[in-house]
Image (cartoon, rainbow, N blue to C red; front, side):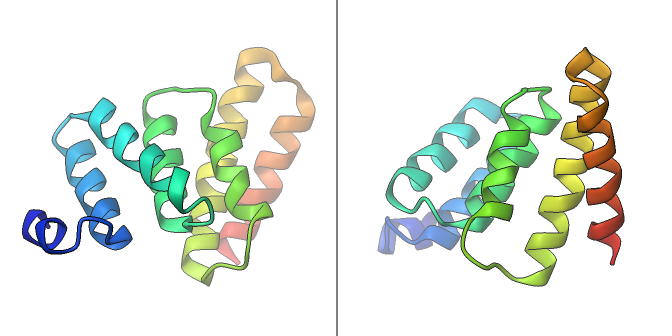
Length: 118
């Protein structure tokens, strides 16, 4: 990945893979920064948005739902990306509901969970 970034520093796929590796090695802040920087130049990059939302979700960051919602409301994406976004968003909304954001968040979480499996 590092070599790919040296050869083509702006290669979006390599930056997402690098951020994923950073997250997996516990370097969450660096991963988040990499993904946010990428999304500044490519706001419709669903892979980057999905990975950022996943990292936020894992960290308990309440911004996860909004990040993941951006995939559902953005340009068309592949079925697997859409399914993963719905599943992660369902979990994020369930967490919000548990934090007293209301019954509407829980109902939406249940609907998205079902859709993600379809």
